Length: 378
Image (cartoon, rainbow, N blue to C red):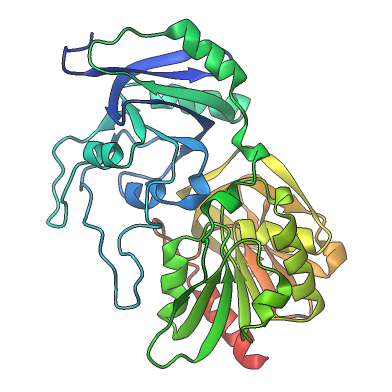
């Protein structure tokens, strides 16, 4: 039973099944692709602001979210925002078992509820997130509708069923174009040791930190920059970032990657960047049943058999890249899907997971050093 000061909320699946709970955050109705994330109680700041979640309603499997609150918006000495992975919440809706109302941390300035309200994003709590996760695991991701009503407002079940049945799959849009920078941005340390052009498909800020903190000048350019525009900066290397959506829609970035490969330009890709490079090499992409989203995903090096615990967030994967001169260097230990590719003779590689962590383990930070070494050798 709802108390009179609690807002009613419903998560409606596309087939008409629904979960009723208590609303927090914004009072509104949204639709999006329903996915789950297995990260534990830490990491919700980074998850909420990760551009790769654009267009998605995210279900958190950990039972209590928001324990350490929300820190202030601050920037570091390079002008990169601290604590968050972008400049705003990027998830379409947020689903938790319980939203912490009384966080405890010396940097906290607001609650999770206040953060979502401020950013106009709806959330729902006190529903069975385990049951929702089981549905997604068994049946695959699907489009859903999240509705948060005002206090005392009547629920509109049939209306929501109609909305859910008609809701568009966000992956049909070019989602990367919606989260990419509109202007060129430059992040420059005092004495740069090299220059990288970063093709922004929805970059996480800790990727920028990982590059700039290694002494690299990073020039961030929009998703639709051409190869010629990128090379006009005379970079030592090119980086293709993570981002949301179906990689096959990113035609301009695929063409850029094809030319980077053709011209032997030192290149590194992460997540969507891995997929774009594989497609540029002549490979193909496919959608995973429920994706890989969490901070504890194990991958194995196909040569050394060494394992790494990784942070991941993707719903698509690649295959058939070998015909373009690439080999698989990393593989997912759960389903044998691709987790990394490398050209057999050129300084070009990419990984499907997030070596920059945030949130997640630090096992794979060496990959940024490998990119740096490739640029030095060339």
